[in-house]
Image 1 (cartoon, rainbow, N blue to C red):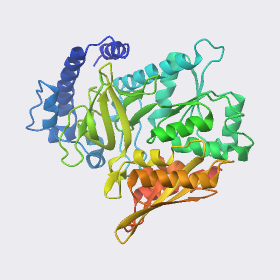
Image 2 (tube, rainbow, N blue to C red):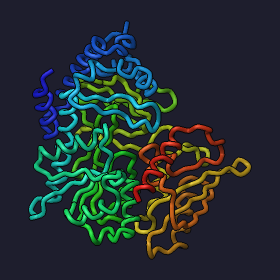
Image 3 (cartoon, rainbow, N blue to C red):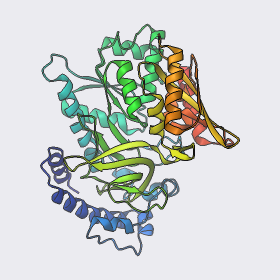
Image 4 (spheres, rainbow, N blue to C red):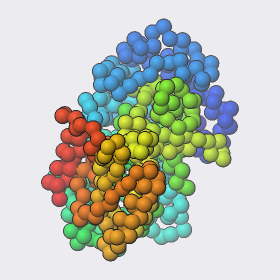
Length: 461
C-alpha cells in the first residue's frame, strides 16, 4: 500500500482543505479496504468476520461489525496481526501493567502515518511559542523507550521539523533524577513531553536536587500524554511550571495516536486514519461518531495491526467544533468511574473538583467510605509551600460537597504515596482513589503494577 496518497490527504485535511463530503467518502472507502485487508490477512479477523457483510456503503454500517476487546488482543496475540513481525519497521508492545503484554509491531505505513499528525501538532505549537524569538525549541521526552512507541515517534516528528529532541527518562539506572535535572538546566530544555502525574512529582522533588521549578529552568511548553489530563490538572501543571500545558496526544500502544492537540489546546480526532465511535455506557449501542460514552476505535490504515471496533475502555465526549472537525475530551476510563452520592462520577469530574485552585496544592489521594448507606469522602491533599492549610480544607471540602452532595473531610499531608505520581500510567483510580466500601481484590494486577512503578521511582531517587 502506497503511503503518499495517505500522507497527502492527511496534510490537506490538517490544512483545512478537505470538505466534510470528501472526508466521509475517504473514510467509507478506507473502511471497506481495511475490512477486506484484515479478513484476508489476520487469522483472528478471518474468524471473527466470517459471514459478516464487509461491503459497507455508509459509515453507519460500522455498527453491524463485531467488537474487538482487550481480552481478544491478549488471547489472539500474533494472530491479530495482518502479517508477521518480519513485516514491521519497528516492534513495540504493551507494558503489561493491566494484563498480558501484547505485540504492537508497526509497518512503515503504520509508523509514518502515525508520526505525521504528531508532526503537524508539534509544528503548530512550536510556531506559536517560538516564532519571532531567537530561542529555538529543545524537546525532552520523559517517557520509557523500551519497546514503547512514544519516544521513537517523537524522534521522527521532531526530526521532520528540525527540532532538537532528547529522551530523558529518570527512572533508569543510566540516568537517574540527579542527572535528569542537571540536563534540564544545562541544555535549557524548553519543551517537555511527560505524563501529568510525573510532571507534578518532578516539580515537587526538584529542590532535593538543588533545582527550583520553575525558577531555575527554561521550560515554556508542557506536552502531556500517558494518562488522563483533566482541565484541573492542565491548569495545575501550567501554574506550577509557569509554562503553557497541552494535552498533546491521546493514544495507546495498541491503537497508535487517534487524537492530537491543536495550538489552541483543543484535542482533535485524526479523522483520515481513524473512526472514533462512541458507545452508550448502559446499552453498548453505537451513538455514531460523537456523543458521551465509551470510545470504540477503528483503524482505517491497512497496515500490520489494524483494529476493528476496538473497545478502548476510555470515557470520552466527542462533539464537532465550529469547523466541523470532532473535538475529543478524554474523561478517564469507564472502569475508573466511581459512584458517589448515588451517581457515577468520572475521573475528570473528581479531578476538576479538587484541583480547582492550582496555586494551593500539588496533588491528592481520596478514600470513599459509606456510613449507614451514606457516602463520605476523605481527601489527603499535598499543600504547596506557603499555602494556607485552612483555606485548602475549606475550599476543597466545600467544592466536593457542592459537586457530589456528600460530606468531605480534607487533611493536609506532607507527602503523598508515589503511586499518585506514577500509578496514573497504570490506572488513574488505582493511583488516587481507594473505595473503602468494597473489599480489596486479593491479586489486583493494576495495584501491583502501580506499586512496582512507585518502587522503581524510589530506587531511582
